[in-house]
Length: 222
Image 1 (cartoon, helix red, strand yellow):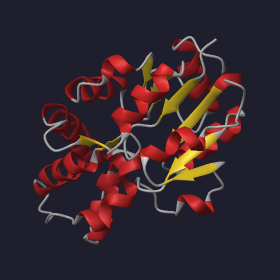
Image 2 (image 1 turned 45 degrees about the horizontal axis):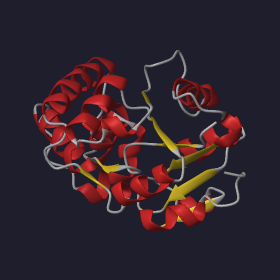
Image 3 (image 1 turned 180 degrees about the horizontal axis):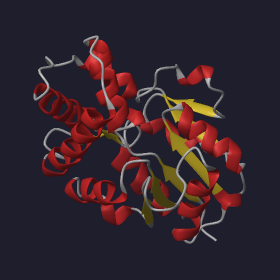
Image 4 (image 1 turned 30 degrees about the horizontal axis):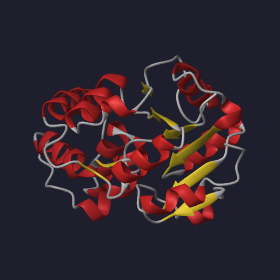
């Protein structure tokens, strides 16, 4: 059976905050909030739209009730779907490493808490959807990361075996998910996290995708 690499999406495969934060600022402007700088919200991008909206209101020291939160979340999803790949880019080195590892027999999947429809749309817009044997989102199953069943379900959907899988992520959520599933995890140190990944105990850390082939050596016989 082919070994499989399972990637998180936001902050791991793609620099999505280049579109997510402009969407956030547009939808919160309707509530009178000024734009929040990337430096002040970027670390929570990986936690999803609701967390980003909460951060914007906290930044401006504004209360956020549930009705407003729900309304802005709905608007966020509509705006984001329409503007999902305006500025978003795949991180440097991703395509080269996928090409190289594919020749060595690896398969690839995406396991993200982004809604599945939006994850698939983004990968299609970026021209890479066909590279992944499965793409699952936060709404694909009744559970989502850090529940390990999200990760193992993604692997199964791709025709893989958890005993021959590696998770690639950028945050505590990814690392905790992999740990709970008993799957090795490599963290990128350039993603979206409020805690440095070196403090979260991944098996290995990379600073560029060119380092990935070396980082995954030795986890299991290929």
